[in-house]
Length: 289
Image (cartoon, rainbow, N blue to C red; front, top):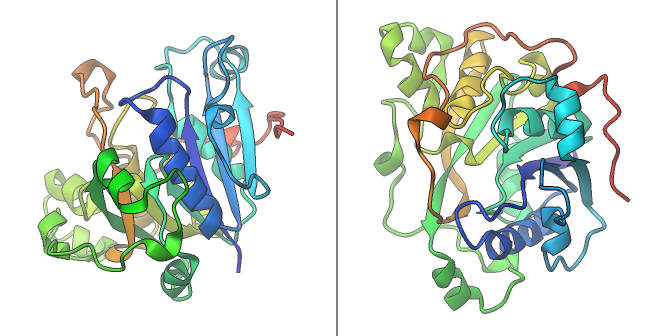
């Protein structure tokens, strides 16, 4: 069974030290996954795409799709979209990943070992999405522990330490179903569907599950809440969403822009509005060579 990781980004130093964080992350992902699909969205003309700035030790499993500013304008057809649009770029990657299982993650996440990931994915059910709790690390802490820009996955601890799974739960259940969700008022569905804080850092599902829900909701072009909504769509299709503290994943901390003007509405989407061509499946998105 093959497993793909899908990540997206833009060479804009979002959050600071992006080159350093992405170098750690992508090298760890390439050690773990059968393929890593990176979608570079809207990097300014005249600048290198992000992966071309990184010290990557083995690119043989890395697939890069570059969505240039001109291509972005062609795809969005004049719509007002932030410079970095995660839902569109993630969906481009998901539609072009070949893994039996697809993990949507971020360019500042350190992946677990393949052996640890296989434990979880071997029991993954159809129409189930697993969202994994992260442990936040400062970049300086990673340097202290690993001492170089290339992480060795076997050095990643299995247990975070004193943090229990309950410290980051956003819901009274580790596993959520539609039946459980509907026992609560609709105003609570967003929190219940999230299951954990930062639910979008490592979301695991079969490729068929991603296709059935038509990926991330493409109307949510601003920041935040798209990850919760994708889990809500799984639930509305009578699927299961499970929060897990295994395998261990680490998130390299950074500054955030949480201006309200760039945030999506918290309103939930019960039925997808995405077209059958979600992820621009009908467009010629060229794989970089």
